[in-house]
Image (cartoon, rainbow, N blue to C red; front, side):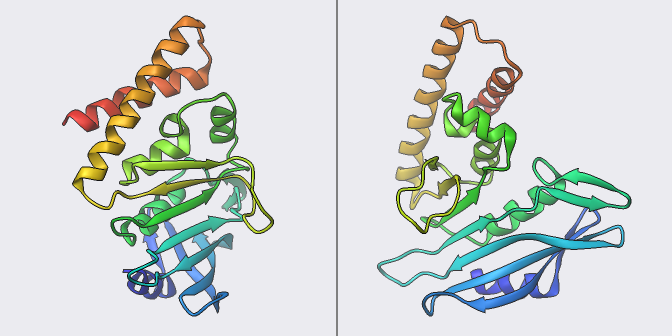
Length: 215
């Protein structure tokens, strides 16, 4: 599926007046890895968007993964700038890459420039109740890790790791853990009388997750 994704990116993927295309593709550190420089076009404006590192997997031992990093937050639209985060352009990018990843595959997304996600995670919110975590959950990722502090020298900046369940049993297990996290968050937020905008957003996301799980 990742080979098909790269072919599509070479041609350009469009939605809501945005087009995302692979500006440059180079070999990675080993034969299964590729580096892609993504650009965007909209309203006769064009510019750098982000870098994607794609690992195609090495069956049967290693499953595919994708990392999105060095994300350009300021998108030029006509004579103004708009934020990439929480935009239809971000939705296009996340959806495009998530749809190309199958069971067990992982998506890493850098978030250090994503103010809302960064502050929510610093406040101790469950990953799925952060802005970015919630979007990844809606796209099918059910296991998460917050790389809030790089553990070596090559991991880059803060990022979220989302993983798709390998099977139905694993997905149900992940979902039970998420629901427990939501309950604990609700109890703690109620006890502290937290009423920030971030907390209100988290409660709305929690209600949506529960509705999705129960539907």
